[in-house]
Amino acid sequence: MAERKARADALRNRETVLAAADRLFARSASPRGVSMDEIAAAAGVGKGTLFRRFGDRTGLIRAVYEARIEPLRQAVAEGPAPLGPAAAPRERVPALLDALLCFKLDHRHLSLALEEAGSGSPYQAEHYAWWHGILRDMLERLWGAGDGEGAGEAGAAPDGDFAAHVLLAATRADLVEHLAGGDGVTRERMRAQLAAFVGRVLGEERTV
Image 1 (cartoon, rainbow, N blue to C red):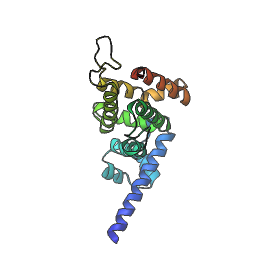
Image 2 (tube, helix red, strand yellow; image 1 turned 90 degrees about the horizontal axis):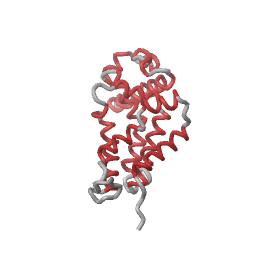
Image 3 (tube, rainbow, N blue to C red; image 1 turned 180 degrees about the vertical axis):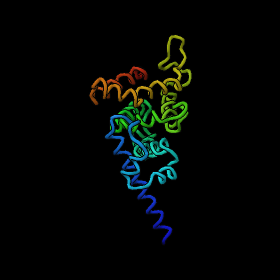
Image 4 (cartoon, one colour; image 1 turned 60 degrees about the vertical axis):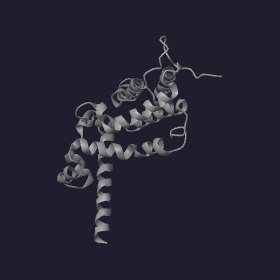
């Protein structure tokens, strides 16, 4: 019984820390401006607790990000259309990218903090590889392997791996921050621009 209570307390403490960090990133003008000291104070725990539980600042940011994006990941992995695996690629790819863009808009500073905190290539990160793999597989299903659909003059199918990178680049947090925070592009305008871009990448739908 005592062990179960300890686990419950640890889970509550973890959620308290994640919520405190999330609030601080949302309020900060710059992700770099949020320190581990501030997060510990807001959560009511010692800074040593943060390092023991999350390893370092990057680990904490990643944990907050993953907790917030988990419902979207579940919808993509197991949910119904248009995000879920049963949806046709032409429906699912635009829906997935729109959902990612909306998440980045709703969590601008948290998403930016994760990108800025990464060490090494961001393309090696687990969360990036997951989204890229989903998109690549959908694009390869849509275009096929050498069947000519969406092909260029040489008659070869487009490269789904490269196209998935390009499409994900359109939802990067630094670009979203630049457009929304710097250029003042509205949410609906950004979504419409992304939808138009994705439509051009996917090409026209064949009719029989």
